[in-house]
Amino acid sequence: MERILYYLLTGMRGGTNRIRIIRSLLDRPKNANKLAEELDLNYKTVRHHLDTLEEHDIVLTYGETYGEMYFLTDEFEAHREAFERIAEGERP
Image (cartoon, rainbow, N blue to C red; front, side):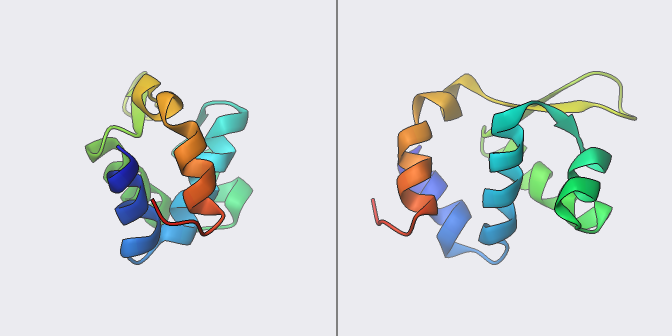
């Protein structure tokens, strides 16, 4: 998981926005619209990053298609310290 986090957050375009999204979800689960509003990002951009994070088991969804909530996975929570190190610029 640590290598996946490193790749998603530093090895691809959009890593800064993915860090911002994850940090927002650390506070509490949110839907894509709320994230877009809170982070001042385009809704489609947020959805793209959420899809990427979901594909790599960082977030999961719950609820109906419209307004579905995004949560951080237990797998992510087990590697939260690695996320913090990578977000601060350390290499794995």
